[in-house]
Length: 274
Image 1 (cartoon, rainbow, N blue to C red):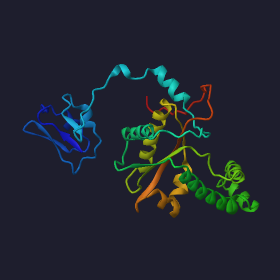
Image 2: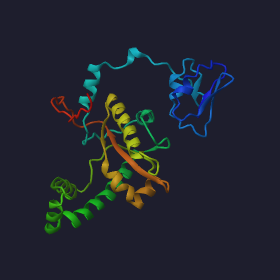
Image 3: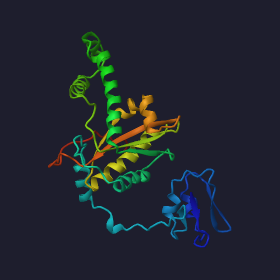
Image 4: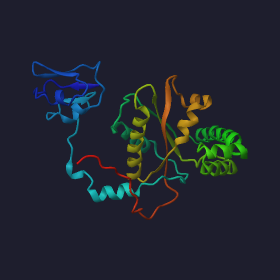
């Protein structure tokens, strides 16, 4: 909750101007927050020159521009980031996991009620893998194994040969994914607009935080598609009635080390305007 320290507020109105929910007003030159309409975006805390606003009375800390990364450091960080699919068996300390996950709260969001479920129990991860493998086997037998069905769906661009190879590989090795020491599920109510996008913004914050601490990561799209639909998995994860898995991430110490930045990749850009 946004708290106003009336002894510090000077009535400058910066928080009123920045509030996109229009829930802050000045009364006798003191800021007052209507918490009924507050989305807790915390822009008001960030802009206050007197540090008169806080989150649950935890005082804000001024930015230190000298600690911001340079363009060269950002280039190194972003181009070093790669999905890690092979992990060491070493567990991640829970304090470090908590630190990584908590950075998700600083991402842009439209759903302020997201929460994270962290699974670092080996048996639970194996159980989720078995659930996913059953889905893989079912889909493979229905879609990819029958040649007639697969050929028809391929012509309709509804089936991808690459997925067929991945499924065959999973069924051959006996597990659906390479087990990371920890899984993070961001869950929330899909009825709130842009919830899945918000979840992935949060996950990307976690990815960069993990990377800076030597922890590898890999987004786990299958969790949203299949694990979320499994009654068994939902019960194991303790999901509420209206909660859904909006994004999932595997975390662990990398068992592989990449040596090179890939240069030359570009994103198509269309310029509009003069």
